[in-house]
View 1 (cartoon, helix red, strand yellow):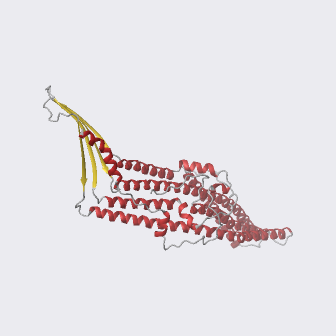
View 2: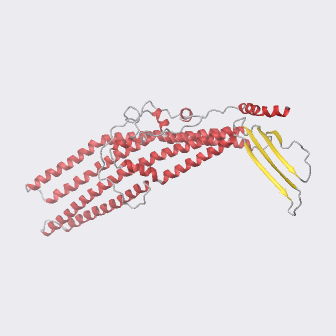
View 3: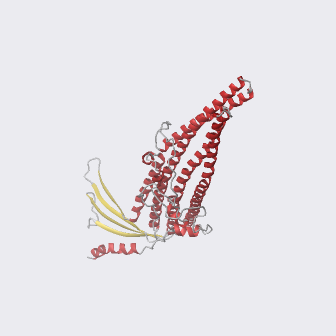
Length: 471
């Protein structure tokens, strides 16, 4: 009767001991880390570079108005090898979470055995033992370890999330860089044709006695220079196509069709506030989660210095035809408890605490570095956009004046006051004046993509939230 009462009270005793475990200290979040690790980095109320007020807009891919981009983005997300690597890291981290979670629960093992004589004797011993144990996590060692792997899992998710954004941004940048090279190659072809015309005119002038061999040599050199530039641009375009194909997971055959125009300029972008940036950026969130994981590892190491208690139970049933067992109550149940107190271990446990503390300090410094990098990327992209906006009318006016000069020279040529050589020279200058404008227009789109990435803006209309640290 007494044994039954004790057996019934065992679950109650276990529950009381489990509830007696201490609560875990909360991990620092992004706001707390900003206050402690970025105390010297005083955040302004608004961006120092020119920025449009308002909330940051997602689904930025539609701003470029290119229907060819969304299918390419989906292809890259499905086949890019870097994203597959990031996904594998997430899966490994998830498996670690599942494995660590089992430490909070009791374990049970069943052992069965039978033995007899190989020569035919009748003696035989057989039985089975069901044993179980439960480490009572009184000080949070197991729970701290579980929190650490959970935060590592969330960090891997945030890294994978940021990798998706980065791959899409790189794809769009490569798309516009290839489009610029297509137009540069076309301009180079026109300039080569004009240079060849000037070379022919120099030869004609030499034949009629108004030119010199020096003029012919200079014109020939100019023609060869432009012809070489055209070949270089052709190679650069093939490299750009291969870069696109690699982002898409394709074989780098330089066969992808690329646009021959840049499309429309995106509308002005709202940049939000500096104080909101860190909670939008997936890479900052991943860095904060690594700090949280390191914090949990410190708690785990500190808890390892304290006594540990485990409960054990065993249910056995043994039979023998050789001798008579003394315990007539078969099967039998045994209960026990084990207390382990670390008395002397050569300073290993304290050294582990110091090691984990140093890891936490390193993770906190890495968070501060990632955060400062995020602020710098936004300010740099905003400054670049502002500069490009100011330069656009200057470059446009230069191109307009070059074309105006060409038009005036063509009029003079038609009335007979200028020869064809002067017209060709101004035509060459007008073509060359298109290159700065083309470079500026491409850079406007590239900087816009960089700004979206820097602000943590997502290309998807309804993307999942960024993982956050466990509490």
